[in-house]
Image (cartoon, rainbow, N blue to C red; front, top):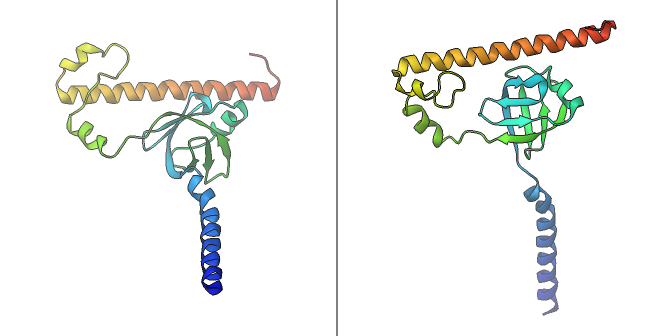
Length: 169
């Protein structure tokens, strides 16, 4: 009987040790690897290729993120921290938009192009357009948004150069 108790105690101890070792790993937030689609708003918003968006609240992190490039790999840890795997930068983030779910993406794609979410003059009247015109309109609006972002980026870089040169605008 004492041998049975010692074996049972040893098995319970091993089970407890295994549970304690697996506990932190199970409780740790999942990390996901993704690619950067775009860095917007002068480094305050990161858009990933899966459709998720992350806000960068810290100004020092924003300056670092501003230099990140599309298609660089990042590791998102628990929707609170992002690591640029090419550069080694680690920044704090806050998720503002969740990734597109794979089950929803085909349904949205099969519905055809839509401009209902577009801002500007292509509001409700654009829903009446033929699909090919709506698709072109979406592309034009996206291109205008990209141009606006590029102009803001150039303006910020000019301001940085002016500060470095000691020239007031």
